[in-house]
Image (cartoon, rainbow, N blue to C red; front, side, top):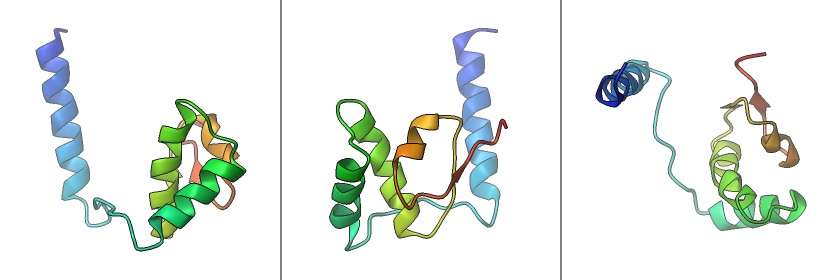
Length: 86
């Protein structure tokens, strides 16, 4: 499989997700910095882990559940997450 084919498959998969009624793009709320700051501090996030605090904060702000196989998200208190591969 070449890269262009993989790219097209990826784009099609994301298009399918957005066709679902329960899929949406999350935007930061007015409390975003407060939530993000707390997660970075309490999760002791440094370096690349700081980037993970961003989707964690958005998920918390919107009362969602993050679906990820990345166990680093367990460090963020108050984040509901599940490993879809488990």
